[in-house]
Image (cartoon, rainbow, N blue to C red; front, side):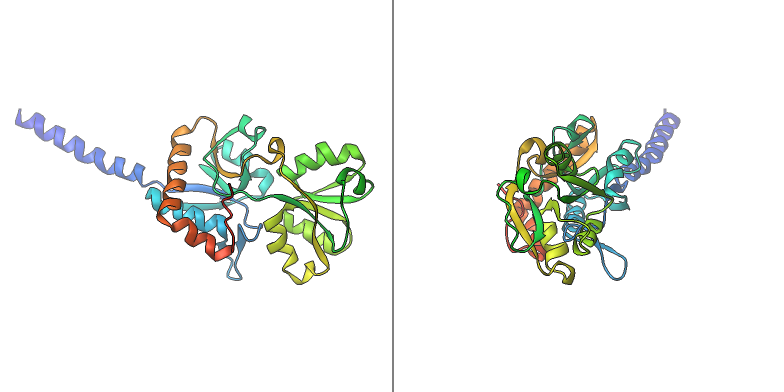
Amino acid sequence: MKKIALLAALALSMLSPLATADEAKPLRIGIEAAYPPFAFKTPEGKISGFDYDIGQALCAEMKVECQWIEQEFDGLIPALKVRKFDAVLSSMNITEERLKSVDFSKKYYNSPAKLAMKAGTLINDPLVDLKGKKVGVQRASIYDRYASEIFAPAGVEVVRYSSQNEVFLDLAAGRLDATLADAVNIDDGFLKTDAGKGYALVGPTFSESEYFGEGAGIAVRKGDKELADKISAAIAAIRANGKYQEVQGKYFDFDIYGD
């Protein structure tokens, strides 16, 4: 009996470290670090921004290490599906279309879509006033889908780019008439820069839930409810303990969480 008890204790001692190691597995997170102020590279080449800091806060709350993996935006969901990472935290809006292929946590922020054009441009009816003009969008984004399905049939030329930064470069160079994108990203990533001088947010706010969803969430593989629920609980926790507001204050002077 003593031998059996000894063997059982030895087996438990061998299993215990494995269980601990599994619990301590890093959370691999996909991100596109070219979307200020949500995600960008510092001069030293490190990822920074609101998305990154929120991710770090969520990992700390869940007591796991964040392991960040960079990916162009249009490759984030395909890479998630083939298990290159466990989650996507990259200003990805929760939409019905995306919910067909991935699941999401609860939202962690919400901001509107707007057009950016030369300052003073009047846009009363985008489907009329943008006809014949070139509008740049980031490929595979909610703005791409909206522009392709709503603007293009009205005679607007939709031009797609790998990153929003590339859109801003062509807009400043006069190769585009406008861009449709997140209002906060346009403001921080373009209008506040030298390249954005002479440009402004124009026209209406675009907020149709069919296209723009109810805010940005953290994507996980379809059916991974356990991870989605853990992340949602962590979002609620950091909003309750003040960490969310601390991170928000580094980047915004308003409530980015939204209603």
